Image (cartoon, rainbow, N blue to C red; front, side, top):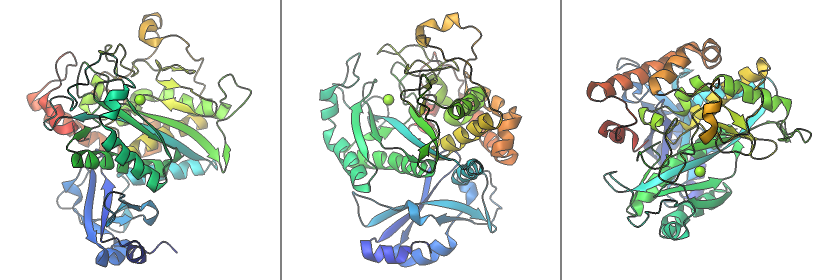
Length: 441
Ligand SMILES: [Mg+2]
């Protein structure tokens, strides 16, 4: 028997529920439902016109219903009369396959066939910027190496404390907050969980940061590269596979502490990295962050080539500790559900085909890349990543041909829209189109 939201509303004095879902472009959509109506909504879902969001639907399609997952319930710590719910999309009595939370659930089911689950953590970076997005909010934050700057961090204490207190109250296990490598940039870390929980929390975290920043008279952005001379917003993900309480990535006898299974999973990601960019770097602006020249601070901290290493941040994949690896390709515009779904799909291919990722590289890839001319490069723009995805038969089969074609179709529409007035050239300043369409990603 699943949790009864009506009774929870009474017990916790919740007046309103946000029944939410994330569309294919990562936009969080909701209906605000009074507690009196939540019983009916829990059963039948909240109705939406799918075409009005970034989903592959037409205005003639019948209603789509968002059925809330009571396990995802979050009572807003800063506004307790409101509670948030992630939901799954249904239409004509069937789940909407080309919707991110369902796509992730399908990959979780695929992995479960091997009696495995994936745990993951995400490191969300964001900027605090001026209202119009033209610059960072803190005009005194101007050092060339601003990373971990205590004064700049503490000038934002009231906001950061409120976000961190909220995560503490929600039981997410937050453990550190810092000023990151770009002026005006911050990162907050909380503990890893099962990948569906991490995806729901990731979606909520972005909403929480933006919402609380507004409350403090600021604007937060997760845009991959809002300022061309500063380090961009990454969204690194830490990955491990588990059988119950046993970490199946852990092997004490390996030099980095990874098992054969972990290397195969990693191999699947290496082999499919170009296509994965379509999900990990899903916006036009994303491609200013990868393959980028060094920034004001000296490094872009983002990858250019497809490589892995030990505890070395210049590669696409880093193995910081035994039993997990860190994927450094994702950026702040990546869809919280599609990140996890795409990692799973590529990793499962790696397991199935026992892919060997080859030897790790121990060099400083930011300076030594010229010595590795055979190494594959990451795509230079969104169109290239979509092309790779479209031609990747294995990944398409694993995620679903129709789902992938819906995604590619919508992304190509977006590129066409951009190209009406603009053309992509990372040597030129960030375009207005990018700001209008990506600052609130
Ligand atoms: Mg970081």
